Image (tube, rainbow, N blue to C red; front, side):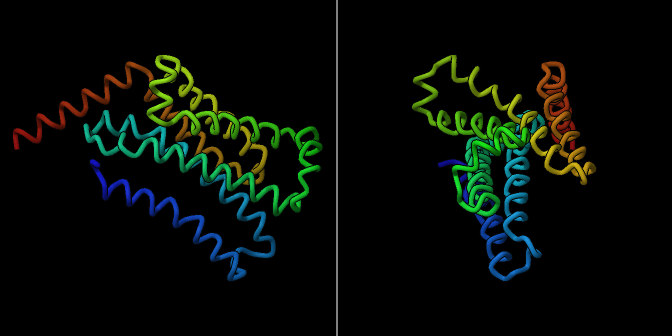
Length: 206
């Protein structure tokens, strides 16, 4: 397997973060409401991993290094995992494990409904991330996985509702998202490839 140590480093890094948060909760170091902190941290972690997933293609175009694309699927699966843990933590800590309350929450709190929509999209991408799914779906696979673009917008909307008192953090993530989406425009993709070409030419001259 190519980039074995790079893949392992990404795996260990993604795994260690929620384990560290759980350790802090066990040590009563997450404040008076550790459950809510875990829910918020896992949700924010899912967004960060989603943005990292989106950044892999621009980084590959800029540097030409294949290692970025080698971990893209893994990052996407970790994004779904964090989202799943975010949902599980919400159900356990904030709803007390009472699943019967979920229907009422979806109706009364629009941000919960938006979050559920975003998670459903992540689940669809995760379930079709295998090579078998790529072969099975053919051209439809790419069309399906373009859902990542509306999903990141939905996740940002969900976050905006949740962290209205901390809008600076939301604008930071929204700005990063805007840049990453802009880099998907064909003109910008060509510009990245051109920058890489000039960097290579300078390296050869040295």
